[in-house]
Length: 321
Image (cartoon, rainbow, N blue to C red; front, side, top):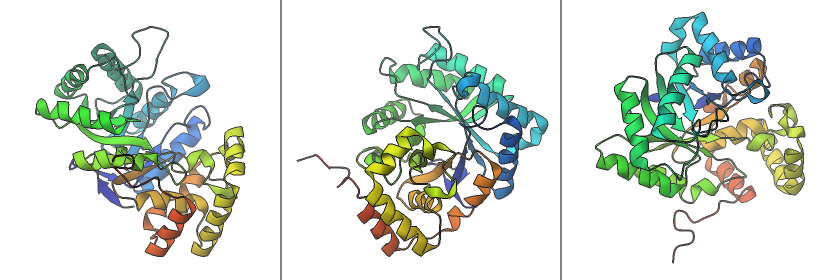
């Protein structure tokens, strides 16, 4: 496994980040534990979750599974960088959602209880909250840091302007600010290159790519798509991009790699990307992509990928005049 600094912080995280959204709703507790154990054995030290994950089992179910795994062996906690998120509705209560200072404090305490840990390494705002002033948000996170409950703050699904605003407000408070942004980014969805990634580069914010396989669209027929390649959305995407995917498959055959492995490796070859999130449903799926950090795509391969999946450029001034 290879490691990179998370943004401008001194924290080092594995290039593959274990996403846990499947834990509970799609993957049993037993198999989730097997995936976690395999991930640690592979050298993955970065685990990402969210307080809302749980699907039909209910919000918080995924964090609770992680909590049981940590409780089995308390030494595990010190071996991983643990990230979770706040924003999504956790109940029908009008205040049990968003990024108010009150909800941030209560949601963090609830996550700590479910995870059975005393601190969260990276606490991420899951979405932008247009009703919450950044001053209020930073006040709340400053308090959590002072209490020792969180160490770093990150964002997810933020636009470039909000990343800039958040960090400018933090600078004014003489605080570190955001160190990471978790963004939708893959070969078929490159809009983050326009302003999000440039903004992150300017402020020293590491980018964590989520859905690097485009929900299964880029996984190919080898079963790396977490079973989602048969969904109506992926089927529609496959039909709409049939020519692109055919050219992509041909390139992957030439590279002697699976489409999923190439898609994950491509993200890690892009400027500003710290890690790619992988969300395996089974231990075998994780093992199949464990070699991704070792894949080297040369200039010719990267150029062909750009030709197949063109960037939306030039960034960051695509529409400026």
